[in-house]
Image 1 (tube, protein in one colour):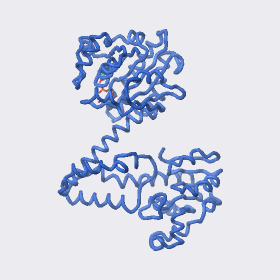
Image 2 (cartoon, rainbow, N blue to C red):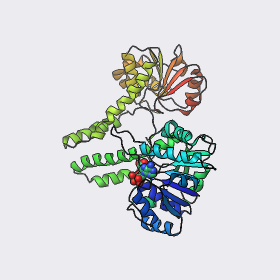
Image 3 (tube, rainbow, N blue to C red):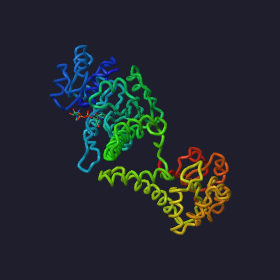
Image 4 (tube, helix red, strand yellow):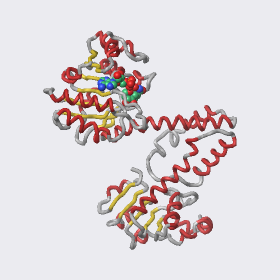
Length: 438
Ligand SMILES: NC(=O)c1ccc[n+]([C@@H]2O[C@H](COP(=O)([O-])OP(=O)(O)OC[C@H]3O[C@@H](n4cnc5c(N)ncnc54)[C@H](O)[C@@H]3O)[C@@H](O)[C@H]2O)c1
């Protein structure tokens, strides 16, 4: 494949060297004359393990050249990779000046190119940048429409400086964002020799995965640093504690708890967070991120409450009262908090929760219900159908598998606020559906 790489900084140079190593013909394009001069003489403009030899070999074998001539670079290649900088603007947003400029100049060059051309965005850009900004610019500058001699893909780079050549050769996966109905064959072909799964998704999702990956890494680092500081101050070998935390691949280092949904609660998480924060205070250790956990959790309850309020005061059916499905445990349940907020605003509320219903009748959790939520107990009904009688707005926190068929058929014609992300709900016809966190 013939590939032009726009922006030969950390990402671009590694792409140039590694794509040439894969057998592609590569042209590096930059506005920095000194970087181009270095590349032409077979030297890497960046310091990275293994990059010097890669660049030298690629230039010697004639597979890597460098130019500032955009038209020539576009006309002589099938694909343009864009890896120019996207630094922070003064207001903290991502500055898209360089990518916008490059996309426009590539588009103008495509206008006079006889064959079709693909543009692959490797720079980190916020979700929606392609659809709302770059694709319209590319179409306007090239005079072509996507799918008609013009292609645009998002293919974010996940390499880390310091191990970037290794990361390019063995990435965790190759992520491709493409417009609907486009199989991104050209991008798949470029990476055919790389042994890594390929995930294809929409342009928006691909852009967002790169963005949130970096935020997630920062959250992990900050968690380790804050928790480690508290543990160390409490005389614990924090490295050993964190090492062992990572040994749990079921709940800790796993997809568990990494799905957008409703607020957490229950008898353990809120209590143990408060306990850990208290330990931090006693040891005088500041933990700004951990301190935000409970307030952040409350904002999720508020968000659901506000979504209900926006629909106007009306009778509401709430499915789920225990803090999560499959239990009758009501301690610190976010659904109890939501129900209380609604009651406080004078909403007419019906609540259905199979397990709480059983506990109420059988006495297992009877004492807690009598003591803590007698005002909610009065609102509990015995079936999904009873909850929905005379009600138009259903708020689904959770519902057991056995109750789903009855609930889904009774929901027809209702407005549904889904706090749980239940796939069958999303697919149910005849309801006015709104998800809260997805
Ligand atoms: N550095 C990393 O570890 C890393 C990893 C993954 C993704 N990214 C993302 O990749 C992108 C590039 O990052 P980087 O660290 O390589 O940036 P960089 O600043 O090292 O390189 C950017 C290059 O683009 C060039 N450039 C600017 N305007 C240009 C134009 N109009 N035409 C051609 N070249 C132009 C600059 O001269 C520079 O050489 C960013 O969006 C970044 O967030 C970076």
